[in-house]
Length: 220
Image (tube, rainbow, N blue to C red; front, side):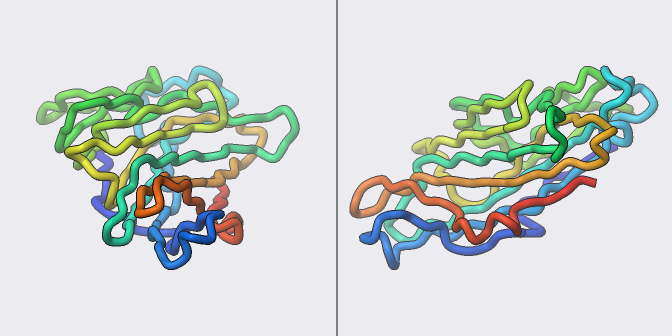
């Protein structure tokens, strides 16, 4: 199975201006798009070779996306993309097994291929013709990325601006998560914050609180 990563946010569930708590920033807005979380059952992605570590859990491959467009004369210095995963039942929490990209510091790449294997790890690999390995095609990996949340229900990607790679345009990331099948479904609430540098300094920007409901999705 091959999953092609789109170049742009295809199904935005939020499209609008980020907000600041500072009055002086009125009229200077950074526009953002946050894509609808896309998902696949890991059993479909990997096929018959997949043996779930815990047979009573549902394993998913998730894709998140966002896009930023700052106004002229401003630059995005940092972005944090976070997903809050819940099942709604007390004591039942989803678990993040892996994130991609996990950590990239100085390297710029194109046409990255990552395999998704039975170990529930996403790793870069050369996929030869006729290979039966599942792989995901990613047009570009952002050069400065760190993550957190593996083993928890809060997968997080932190993007930092690099002098050769500004934080503008679309970004796509992946996660492998599991939740107890008894919960029947999992809720995802996506959040994004950005630090933007303008004429008054660097200010934190947020998705408007009124958008919380539209940034929440349930799977399946």
